[in-house]
Amino acid sequence: METNFLQILDHFSLQETVAKVEPFGNGHINDTLKVTNDKGEAKYILQRINHHVFTNVDMLQNNIRIVTSHIRRKLEEQGEQDIDRKVLTFLPTRKGQPYYFDGENYWRVCLFIPRSKGYEEVTPKLSYEAGKAFGNFQLMLADLPDGKLGETIPRFHNMEFRLQQLDDAVKANAAGRLKEVESLIKEIASRADDMRLQERLFREGKLRKRVNHCDTKVNNILFDEDGKVLCVIDLDTVMPGYVLSDIGDFIRTAVNTGAEDDENLSNVGVNIEIFKAYTRGYMESAASFLTPLEICLLPYGGRLMTYMQAVRFLTDYINGDTYYKIHHPQHNLQRTKAQLQMLYSLEAHAEEMEAFMKEWL
Image (cartoon, rainbow, N blue to C red; front, side, top):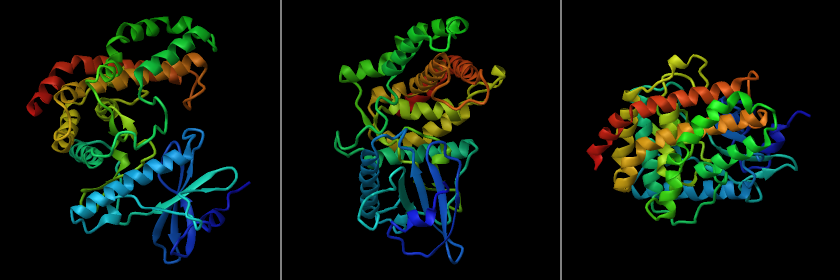
């Protein structure tokens, strides 16, 4: 049955006459639509929340409310004049709820930010701006009390949990693929102890959890007409986590000279200028709240997240491709090999990256 978007929107407190609703962006989890008024102006974003990924929608929306209201308050204190373009604004339903449930799907609406644009490509200049944006995002949220936010995806970046999932997959061998990946499993196992460092440091009280974005990509930032950062978007995964995994995810994706699933492994390597640009922007804000240990370990975060993604792709391949969308039967295996190749390249550049971090110590 075709969804009646006008009927959905009628449940929200909108100030404009809706004329058109059309797909918008290229997000992989939620369905996103742009809502245009009768003057042809984009005014709202309507989203269908993927409640199979975000199973606790109340927690999800409460996290977003806490984060956006906290940032809004900080911007007001700073005397910001253009606040509605510097932080997302979500609209309640006519009954005052943060989302509308139609009996099957969950829907939410936020204001469309005018004169804004996003980028998909990664350049040193954009990486620097992205680093500043995510560093400032964490800085503004650094004084949120512990326990204020919930984990929208429990154990999302927990390496011990991901390795346990792999171990369970190996034992079950559900798709009968174990024999062909034995060498990859050994490669993963050889680094497993080193890659559990984050959780060990947390238990020892040497590493704390902070407010993380957990999807630190250039396309999760909106820029103005002059290429300056407006705000960080896609807040569904904002939750407590370790800064190593937050900066590490950017290193894993943006610093890679190849694709995440590159079939030609010779394409995969480290663009050190992208790493330096992002880190320089990030540290301009983040240096004020990070500990010396966190600063030293930021390059390790890139290796950690690359390794973690290899583990997740391999786990899914062994399980019979039950989680990630694939385009051919060997896709998850191809992804695993590409991520391991990126890990090898990061290991080769580890000394240079760690030396670069010393200027902030």
